[in-house]
Amino acid sequence: MTTKILTLVLGAAFLSPNVPNLSCGAKATDKKEPQIIVQTKPSDDILKENKIQVALLLDTSNSMDGLIDQAKSRLWNIVNTLTTLKYNGKAPQVEIALYEYGNDGLKDENYIRQVAPLTQDLDLISEKLFALRTNGGSEYCGAVIRDASMNLNWDGNDKSMKLIYIAGNESFDQGKIKYQEVISGAKKKNIYTNTIFCGDRNEGIQTFWQNGASLGDGKYFNIDSDRKVIYIETPYDVRISECNAKLNDTYIYYGNSWF
Image (cartoon, rainbow, N blue to C red):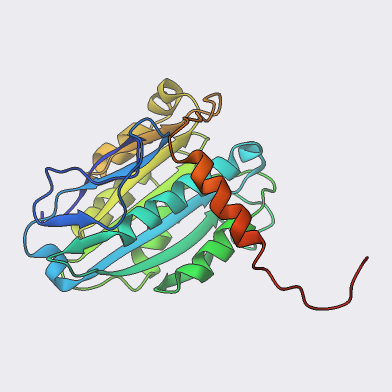
């Protein structure tokens, strides 16, 4: 095994100092900020290939109402963190794919849609991700993982970092396609599966989300919908506010006046 996600926990968006020769382009301001850490421990040869490929799989069923915005933010935080990785001062090539699943409006027997293939156009991924809306509910995790692991253009080099992140809030074992077989098959291709349960951590464990991550040599994470965002005052807040005010004065308006 050449690469895998080792941990996925709440904290500031920074990479562990234990990672050799790997640096993050932006430093965290406070370790109490409730964000996702993507902590990786690749071998010395992995990032020399300069390619990280990630498939984001998001449940867009109605059961995600009230949760989907948090899930989108967590998935995008993963993307942002991965783009700050450097190996010997060189940024890797990052490719992101996006799927939605569990939406009854999708014209697929397993209610799956590939929103975007693996691409370096992160602006496109951001636009597509935050435009997703909920509808209906038949959430087949095994089916969408199978589709992503088999149909995306994964790099043939075993040293490339290849990851799946799936987020949802219904039982992980729904549908005819067994997630155990699919995740094991993906792992044989060096594609590692990480799961994000949108709800209580223990509920996610009981509904097999943790088991899916364990089988995929990834990590299990949950989003606590009841957790409040913590605002922490810093000595820089006043200065930032002043700078924002100055920036607003530089805007030039164009078009018909409404005044």
